[in-house]
Every structure is written in structure tokens, then in C-alpha cells.
Amino acid sequence: TQLLEQSPQFLSIQEGENLTVYCNSSSVFSSLQWYRQEPGEGPVLLVTVVTGGEVKKLKRLTFQFGDARKDSSLHITAAQPGDTGLYLCAGQFTGKLIFGQGTTLQVKP
Amino acid sequence: DSGVTQTPKHLITATGQRVTLRCSPRSGDLSVYWYQQSLDQGLQFLIQYYNGEERAKGNILERFSAQQFPDLHSELNLSSLELGDSALYFCASSRGGAGSSGNTIYFGEGSWLTVV
Image (tube, one colour):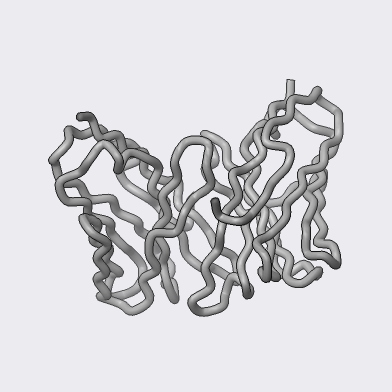
């Protein structure tokens, strides 16, 4: 079983649509991070959320950390083809950075 | 460009063989991490070194070993290779340890290993 469960695993949408990706755990995390990975490249950090209930915005991307610090969400408004990629959440657990399985997003023009 | 350099980028080898993957961290980074990414297992943490010493261990097989040298570069050694070891192996680096507040981890582009 995964410490961090992401849903959905795959998402294919049309340009302009909104979407939300979820990252859930039964464990409490001091912080959660979201990464984006494109084919042939390593994951790149998008944001770190630290405080329960925290909301951070990065252009059309909105990240939220759950009040209990066990879950997080990533919402993309008006998705663009350039948003296509693998989105990964990650959290510190016993000194290790553990990743969820990832959500593969495809945005069609 | 993250500043983390991994070699080789691609490697094809036979079962039973041994390979070494090399990583140069970003300038000034003391921590090096190794991850394995496969389609069915996702991104799995293998091991972390900080300033030459092992700091944390994940799901690393006994056939695998790693070290960080005094110049801070790291090597991941994979031996007695099996078909299931085929994966993308990432090295990452950061200034401090994984638990450090505000510590950003930068990933290299990975080494594709195919075992045939």
C-alpha cells in the first residue's frame, strides 16, 4: 500500500477545462510538496505547503493542504496543453521524501 | 537544467551483470538521494547520503549499494541484475537533509536502465 494515494491516476481533458488532483494519506505530514514531471526529465518542485488549511496559488494552479495535514489537492483552472505531464505529491516521512504514484494529465488542444 | 548530472543517460545490459550509475550533485549541495521509477511502482526512494554518510534508507535491495565520495559525487551500484530492475534511476540533491525546513530537492534527468 502507498503511504500517499493520488487520484485520479490518469486524466484526459480538453483545453480550457478545470481539474482537481487529490493526494491522501492516513498519516500526518509536516509538509507536502507537489512536483511536475515531463517525459525524459526529472520531477520539478512546484510548491511546498506547510500549514494545515494553507492555500497557495501558482498562476492557474491552486494548491491546498488539508486542515489535518493528511491530504492535499491541486486544482488547475482552464487547463492548457502545456500542463500535460505527470503530477506527483510527496511528503516527508521518517526523514525520507516519499512520493505518491502520480497523476498523468493529458490536456488535448 | 537542475544542475544535477547523471551518467550514463541510457544503459542496456544483460541479466546477471553489474552496472554503476554516477551522479554529480548541484554545486554546494551536501545531500544526494537515489530513486527508482518504474511504471508499476512509481517513484521509490532508495537511499540518501549527507556529506558522505548514509542518512536514510528506503526500499533498496541488498543487490544494490551506493556511496557518496569526499567530492560529494555519488554512485549507485546495481549487481546480479534481473529483468525487473529495468527502470529509470534518478539522483537528486539538496543543500541540507530531507527533513530540513525549506529544503528544495533537485532531480537529475535520470539514467534509463534496460536489463535484457
